[in-house]
Image (cartoon, rainbow, N blue to C red):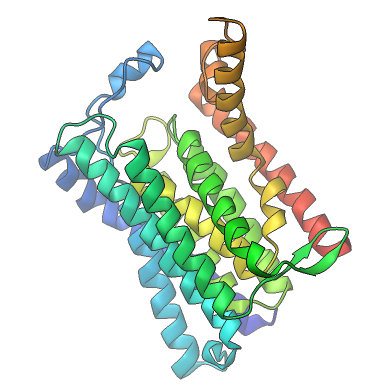
Length: 338
């Protein structure tokens, strides 16, 4: 990347950070005033009850900052700088702007879920079927857009570019569905999901730049800055919770970035924390049923197991973030050498 591109990325991250951090001063009191407080379920750790009433839907802070900054950066690049994003191929543009729309739609679905929880006073929000249907619908729209743009050849580590044809649609939908739900499961303690996601998005800034997808790199830079701004308010003790609004957006964001640079399999090492969290829930359920009531973990998802084992929330955030960094290093090695 040249100096001009690095300057655009740095400016995008900084501006997005300032928007999210500054907006928190107004949005969080507004959420308090509107009584958009989180309801803590009885199945969680008992000490989480003190978080009762912490404003949720905080994901709107980094969603808004990401989209505003990205739109501004694209405009500046196109009309004032020698970075012509719209001169790219139809497939590249579909991956970029289709990915942004898909991530925002995932966030909108999460917002509907949060709204039902806090306004309609239905603690579980959307029903499982309603949420699944919404996720599948959003994922299907994005998958079909890439299929129509002839984006069905994906780069598989150790194999190379492989044309999978019509199978691309269910594969893409599966990845998005897994990512959105896995990220949602990771959002359970102050700062955890935001910090892990910040680290994961940092990888995509570099990966997109190295592979020549400058638009994706700008999108990732805007998202990273916005997440950092959100963490100003979300680190322990959290003043706001991202809610499904933020978690589903992040799942869509990471999926969009991975498909955007045509390396979806890099999500495995980059998203290792999310995957482990999701697997811990699956294994807990299977073990509970197989042993007729015994538990594999003290509580799932896995971060609650460590909480129950005496780890502080900050320690869990640090350790899980370090694991994500190692996953990012592994993914970068795959990107460069495989």
